Length: 209
Image (cartoon, rainbow, N blue to C red):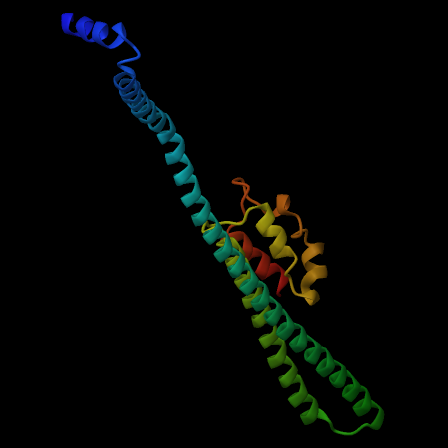
């Protein structure tokens, strides 16, 4: 302690002569204070920097997931539209064949000719096409339901997913679908407030009959 007082007296006894020493001493003290403050500042800032870094990485991950999800939705939209287009085309062909069958029945009755074999062939073709159309509709509905159900990687469809499913029901089945009340999520959803595979299967069996 005595040495410190002695140094103090030496430095401040004649401040003009010891200006360089005082300057460097002050500079040293400033350096020490700055160093300590930088440590304290870095210590205080570290949690914020850490949180910001984690948040930025999480944001990058989330944007990547969101981009992948958007891409999956776009692909699903394209697939569903193609399937619906094929189904609508097949259904229109089925209606045209049914119209032809009815016209031939009328023609055969009016002309009293034997069209039994022709009608049988047409009926067989109509039944085959009708069965194919129904199977396609079942596949379409099940495929749409499955893809929408697992968009969030979880089993079961929530309200928003089910509403998207309703909008993708084939046009020729929409009237029956609505008539049976399947356009209402609250009516279809189970006690867990979700629409699962069993409920979708029941919808398919009721609508495509």
